[in-house]
Image (cartoon, rainbow, N blue to C red; front, side, top):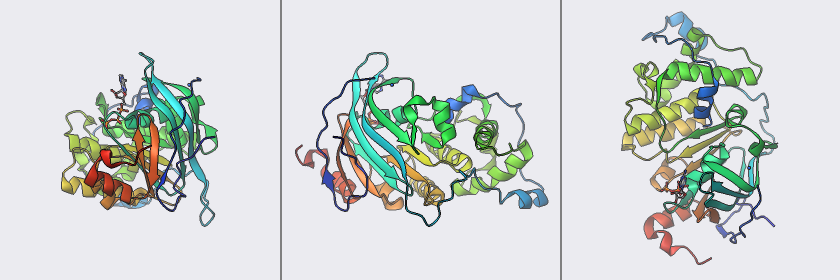
Length: 323
Ligand SMILES: Nc1ncnc2c1ncn2[C@@H]1O[C@H](COP(=O)(O)OP(=O)(O)OP(=O)(O)O)[C@@H](O)[C@H]1O
């Protein structure tokens, strides 16, 4: 029987290692090739005040599913997930179990090479990996049956550890395409370039990003920290029900870390959730986790509260209880 590493646990618990089971299966970044490129345009430094005022209140896409006040719903349920590298068939994930409810922040930590990024990439359908067993259900839908772009449109966002550059596509055009694709999926009217600019200009301050970044090609020539900031900017613009953030804190200076953490906190609502991968407790000083999971050799082997991260930082993984 699968044991789910959900955060309903009130105290740190240890999950048994699950038997390896063999059977068959950025987002937003994956949407890029599927979308028609827009004509490159130049971004004005400032919108006329009247237009800004009328558009600044535009909110990110709504799911139309306002559950305010009602009990939390299960957002993501991962059961016995196993996956291999597509090319070599080397097993990496060996039975991952995780349950995330609305409004929760889950953190995955673990030694280098334990499978954290692979887990994140498998959730968004990265082609480098083949699912060989288990299930992933997001808001009641089987994610493993969805193409990466469908997962993105369904509300799963991933910020990659090493964000890719997209030469020839400006940040604003990229975001406009992706944002309109999601609005279309939600049955909402698409925003034209001016309206869209009015909307995203309200998001720049969230991550302390300068307006000229909108005209630059996606991540091209960005410093490591700027790329991470840009990832969170994308999240702020596109909105997501589940944001998967892979080492969003790596390469950030102290101020940038605060900015990024503040932006993530500002985006959290009772209806959406975050799955963060990190190596350091310092991120958790800014973004308070609902619970922390430790991954080891492709499985989650320990689940508990923030104190786990503190212990790991102090004592390392060698201090983990024997399995
Ligand atoms: N596309 C790939 N091709 C070959 N090996 C891969 C591939 N993806 C992952 N691996 C291997 O799978 C293992 C798990 O990698 P993964 O990136 O998931 O680890 P991680 O826990 O995120 O590590 P880190 O903390 O260093 O980022 C590693 O040994 C890695 O080399």
